[in-house]
Length: 489
Image (cartoon, rainbow, N blue to C red; front, side, top):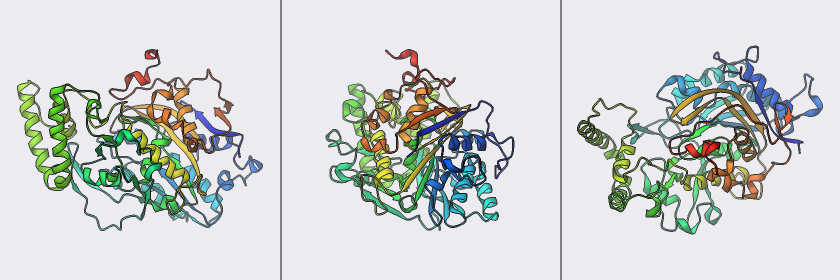
């Protein structure tokens, strides 16, 4: 279809503008970078350099419904880190403008995401200027709306789910997509696995994923859209290693209980929650997992708050005897603390490179995105059109996405194939994508290569094998070797 499948623009001077609605006037270098990527891709090539240039007119027709899917994962504890964790609206703004131009005033634009169950959606869109931008554009008669796709919302304390959120909002419509044996999780290695989801409702997660069933709850806004433009935030991630185009599609699933994040237990217990542990710790962790599966899974709404209080006292007592006393911070993850004490090591909740479960779940959702029709039935390729724009202007390194180390990079990427974009960005950063289970598995799937033909461009030129972006990524805890080229054999 095109000569180029992706374009990357890098400008160290580019930073997020701060005043909504992030109009294109100078010095908005973000708008310019997104626009330049679309020009590099030669979209609507016959009208380039004319006032009629409409880059998305090749895939969008008047009357279409277009969904723009950012990554709004979570409200950060430190407000100043929000723009390093979530897609910034200034990257969305030029996309809205060019989508609306292609629609010619007929059709609608939905900007939406199913962020983490514990995320405060209103706080996120208020902090980063999303709400203000959308409100102003609506006053300018752009038919665009902002939606929270989640059907499940919860409250948390110290890393523990304590209750579901009571709301009068009508839950967004979703479609159950049953993959069955087509799921990447339909593997004999999981025949005895107990899956753990994003929270404590283990019974629900294993109802949707077991030896007979593998299903997801997908937003109908996504399935019914004529075009979806995915706009991930590039950053590091403690469970998957990297969040970009592939990981961003976790946000098309509306109920986090449908998302297996790891198989419970250590490697020598048949799980992938953590590496091998000592025999004595195996007994302790098996006992605790039984409690998680048979008690906490059924009573977490009742026991959540008391558990926070009890674990808080236990930790304070432990700290007192280990001479590390202090007030219990609201940022302390008590669930992780308990897991580490029982397992005898520092890795918990699948936050390490050996977690294959989350990679398979991510691939399932990518296949749904690329291949499912409006009714959630698998095809070789969906009629839905798709496109990707990556926000890497400022990225969260280290222990992302919840505790990122902020780095300004000035990068934007755009293209037709998510796998190509992710792997090319990593390669340019001198990181071998094959070191990440997610990408080594994805490259073996033919359906992941849809619309991957064509050249890769970096600042307007075809990428050479020796090209590198002068940036050293910092990996999350337990992932350091994957991000250090000098450690490779």
